Image (cartoon, rainbow, N blue to C red; front, side):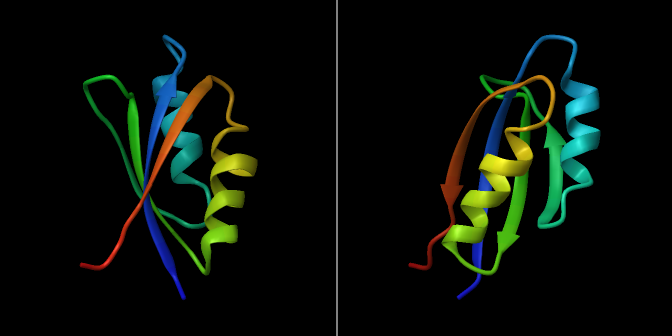
Length: 78
């Protein structure tokens, strides 16, 4: 079953623009935006399963230079 998630990304000062460009290039990231508030970027991601979602966040998003923290909010059906 496909998994959708919103990933809130905190970035080191002065690295937001470069990090946003890198996030947008990741396969599975459907959209990403710089935002105000406690996080700097919010990305909407899709993966084939929960494991794939975890790999996308851990191996790809967190590997981007300047990314200091992420919070992943998995979308659910109600």
